Length: 121
Image 1 (cartoon, helix red, strand yellow):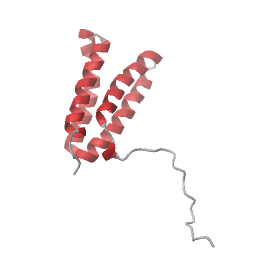
Image 2 (cartoon, rainbow, N blue to C red; image 1 turned 90 degrees about the vertical axis):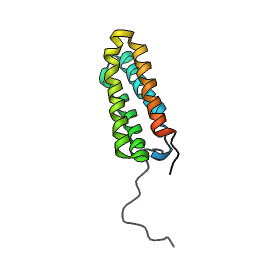
Image 3 (tube, rainbow, N blue to C red; image 1 turned 45 degrees about the vertical axis):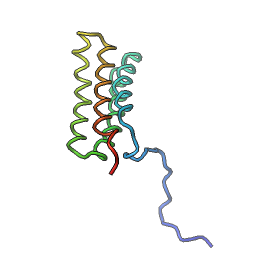
């Protein structure tokens, strides 16, 4: 005899996401900034680069807010977006790749120090 089941069938698990407390965000930041730039540059479709930037940023922000709360999560999110914005005028002074790599390195290092290197409670 079968055990009673609910009236609704179980939905298949379509998307797997690691628990937010287990995600290292520094690599996500680098992938978002560098990958977004590279995607836009190679495809010629700037909004597609924005999708990469937004997806990596949202995935990282989920961990920032979960591990460190609203003040640090907000600061890192604004820093990520600010880094994206700052890379444009910086590119006019030092070139596109050096600008993107510099901004990605600083932003990723900040995320590492503020969240990734902090021991869990």
